[in-house]
Image 1 (tube, rainbow, N blue to C red):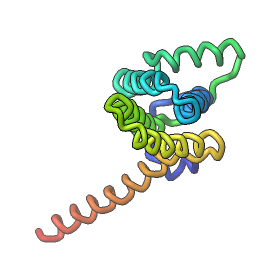
Image 2 (image 1 turned 30 degrees about the horizontal axis):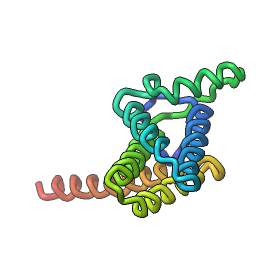
Image 3 (image 1 turned 135 degrees about the vertical axis):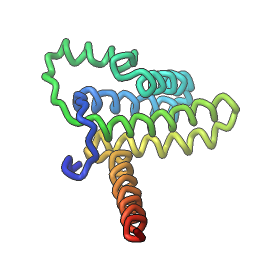
Image 4 (image 1 turned 60 degrees about the horizontal axis):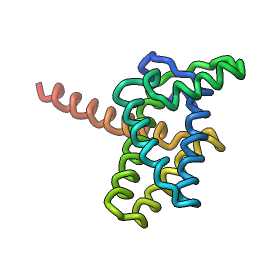
Length: 158
């Protein structure tokens, strides 16, 4: 994704860790969709929640994947974390939704939500296109422009 169009918050995140995490998320989603194994969805919901609420360094899955990357001696490549944090929030929303739908017995709906989630994750992993990052950019540019227009109209009245 073009970094110039993305919102920034000047926090950094390792892009290889995020890609590795996304690959594992895709594998866990496929386990649910193809083998009807429900445990990974609960694991994802808890891990995404920890990651969003407390940070990447507290996520058990991110910690384990970080150790694997260290063992493989993959040098980190840092990018701005703003859009990836938004993507993690969207991932948490999806994973918690799927877990709750499974828990309540709405398996067909859970599978539909999981397929949409898998499509978003695979677009990140395979095409290097982060749908949530794009959504955030569009959201901020639209509502940021709308807010600026409202402010200009307010100050023009004076």
